[in-house]
Amino acid sequence: MVMAVVAVGLDATVLSVALPTLAAKLHASESDLQWFSSSYLLVLAAAMLPAGLLGDRYGRKKVLLSSLALFAMGSAACAVSPSSGVFIAARVLLGLAGAGIVVMSLSALAVLFSEQERPRAVGMWGAATFVALPIGPILGGWLLTHYWWGWVFLINVPVALLGLIATFALVPESRAHERPGLDLVGVALSVLGLVALIYGLIEAGQHGWGDATALLEMVCGVALLAGFFAWERRLSRRPDGQPVLDVAVFRSPSYTWGVILAAIGIFAMIGVLFTMPQYFQGVLGASAMGSGLKLLPLIGGLVIGAVPADRVARLLGAKVVVALGFAMLAAGLLIGATTSVGSAGLFVAAWMALVGGGMGLALATSLSAALSELSEEQSGVGAAALQAINKLGGPLGTAILGSVLSSAYLAHLNLSGVPAPAATAARQSIFGAIAVAHRLHSARLLGSAHTAFVNGMDLALVVSACVAIAGIALAVVFLPRTSTLTATEQSPAGKKPAIVAVT
Image (tube, rainbow, N blue to C red; front, side):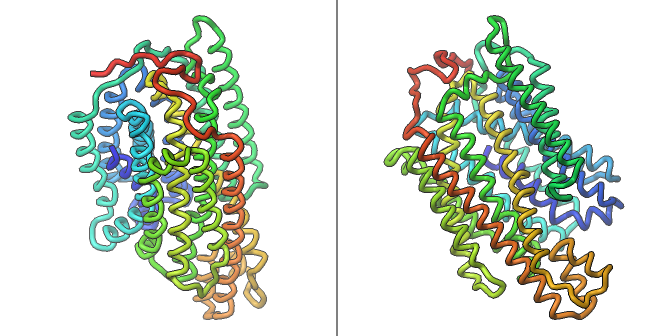
């Protein structure tokens, strides 16, 4: 399951390296290139809740096996796509499959592991989701340099097939004893709301917060999601109601604040994930593959923080460990905000490792706190709701921090003496400015672009640190010290944990 989760993350990160090649091979327009990425992310987020419902209703192992098979087929379809339209359709299929893999693998942790074992399992699962961040550019860059571009996607096929074999042999079937109903209204509202909100955030990140279309999409998304929760609350109160998501699960402080704090951590982490690859490539001149290698200290720190999080949480309690993780995250980000154009590589690696360690502690423990409150009956939809909310952290962080970086970059960029058309290109991004500087043979513009970008990057890291500091406060005030439930106590919905059919 860990390898399958890595494959899902790998598919998202490797695409960024492959876009220039895909533009040439598939004759893709700028709009096509945007949809290559957006279609996957939108479907991945929107299909989370339906995937959880199907797992609870028909069997989580069945949904996981089906998702792994679809993922292999979608990866193969991407590799042999003859046109942009076919490639986008294959990406949609991958998004559907990826949602099933992520939700069912996380749901399985609540079924397969005891409350004592679960934090370590969640730590390994969380580490796997981030390992793909550097591996994607490293592996993708190497494959594109030496082999046919289709291998970038075909590498997922054997991983998915191995996952199929392991799941079939090792994972027991589990499902809700009482099959949940098919709440089609709730499913439709959640899917449409998530698609509208996340696409609006993506558009805001690309075109700015003043873009009317992006704002309208976000407003519609929030309205649809508000309607979803109102509908689910109404169904929950009816004697014969069968909501897709029992909103009573949010009465548990551990679940609610575990979910929220995980999303806050992901938002703060975006400060590094969004800015540092651009810093490595735009300021230091690294290749995409080299940029991936320079991210390894971040991932190493994350693994070191996530794996022992369960033992630390048993000693100190979830509240203290999550607050400690956010404190390390904030400290690392504030140190990172002092990075300059000429900072030593060891300095950058050290503060990124500190950020990763803090993120590992905070994320693994907050996710464990949330999962510990789910009865096996609720594990599918509960895990899906957790993942759907977390998927908002990435695009929201990218949109906000991207705006912060862009504003500071433009404020510090010196374009005096640069022709108007070239100045327009330089304002778009640091890579546009570098291209203009090389074309004009202007060392002054190149230096100004580097300095302006680093100013924007440092400010974005400060904002991320403030978000992490908010995470400390929320963890201390709202997160229970330990899980409020045991196996013999009631579930968040006020019901005893239901018997789950396991074969």
